[in-house]
Length: 203
Image 1 (cartoon, rainbow, N blue to C red):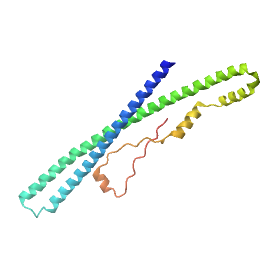
Image 2 (image 1 turned 90 degrees about the vertical axis):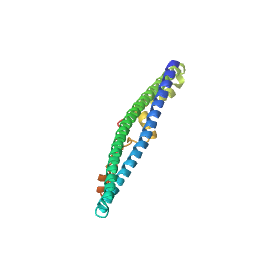
Image 3 (image 1 turned 120 degrees about the vertical axis):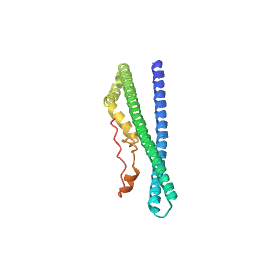
Image 4 (image 1 turned 135 degrees about the vertical axis):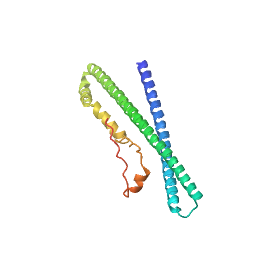
């Protein structure tokens, strides 16, 4: 019995450490992704400005100045390609981490639910046996014990678990994935784009 308690304690600690590590990793990657997105959008604006400068000054500058403008445009295009690639890679990495976090979260919830079912079942059976022993020794109080037994018959592990989940749940939807947003598609679209709907987690 003592060894079982110690084993469970170690399992709880292990699950907690795993969840904390994944949570920190997800938050860190999210920050990196948002920074990559910010840099990507800035590179898009830089490239747009360079293109506008080329068109605006096409007939107003010398050949040497025009070459400088084209060189700057080429540099901004190259920087944009690099930042675009980095942004997409960050989004892909974040999605993998999010999927891992969700999988571990579900595993942890299922483990805790199983432990709670066993705990309720253990105490229900222990109380039932105790009441039976008292009933044998105290026949005059058997009616009261019978009321307790009837109450125990109404004990539903599934309902107790559902009640706890409904009471303490933080929501029924997992965090939606962060999707890649192409800067130019966003600018051309005059109507705002709604965020992707989160997918419900089946328990």
